[in-house]
Image (cartoon, rainbow, N blue to C red; front, side):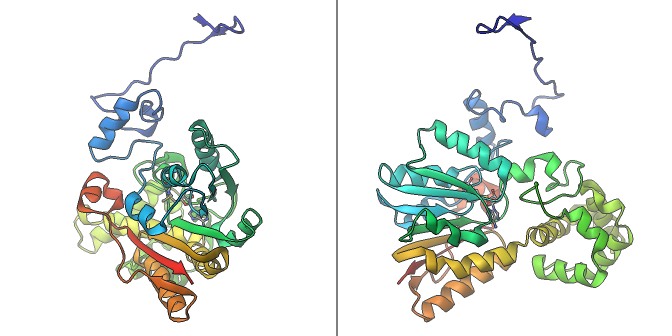
Length: 350
Ligand SMILES: C[S@@+](CC[C@H](N)C(=O)[O-])C[C@H]1O[C@@H](n2cnc3c(N)ncnc32)[C@H](O)[C@@H]1O
């Protein structure tokens, strides 16, 4: 036992987490990655292997976003999807000392951790404020910025922290209840959705949210075995069995598993409705000449962003918008494979 200097109370020595082999495999064994301030070299080594360290998110298309937003010192803006704060910190570096950034996110747990991290970098309430809320309500931020903002960023989807934390049910690598909520403090889980949804609605959702080619057969099987599909691994096993029955080798079942998880996640979090409301509200929040940049990760999102930016440019509400989406460089896709499906679109308020 060692003693705590201040209280003289004995502090119990914690044994280091043990794992077999040379690299930790399970999330809870990755104690060095989960403490990046204490083990920066270990975290760098994980990044060099092309992996995202546990408990962290590598921001995507950073230089492309910074140039699309045309940031300058003194600007005011909103990061609609704060996540780990990778983009937010780069933005703060460019808009301070006189600028102001509001960082919003629906995930209360991750928002709190990110705020603490950003405060430790020296950004106080005069330059950085946070709100735990859905970006569909972005207009409510006009009480912080009554005259509107110079820029808005949205980096859609889930963060690596959400994907990789086993208990949150986003990944089928670990067994966990099938949750899939971004805000795990409220709303219906994917497990609960599967207990009440009809076969017809499930098939439609797999097609609309993820273009799943085996939607019919998977929708039928998932609902007839819905109790087995209450966990991440259970759902993944049912999908694999069904597709193998259709003649697919087991190594070709993974894309369908990912698409089913994506489709359920989009449904549980009303992601398309939230994005539509955000796209509708952005022009009311931007000052004249203000810029918006949106990074999306699948076709359902990108189609919506493209349609909104193009339509509002034709109406003269935006003075210009990007013609073809900006993609991450080959180097970034190699360094961070999670960036490979990203598409960035931007527009400028008239
Ligand atoms: C891809 S991550 C953002 C990563 C961030 N740009 C960074 O550099 O770390 C997406 C984040 O958006 C949040 N999010 C997704 N949909 C949201 C919504 N409708 N309203 C607010 N936050 C949302 C998620 O909780 C997640 O933290």
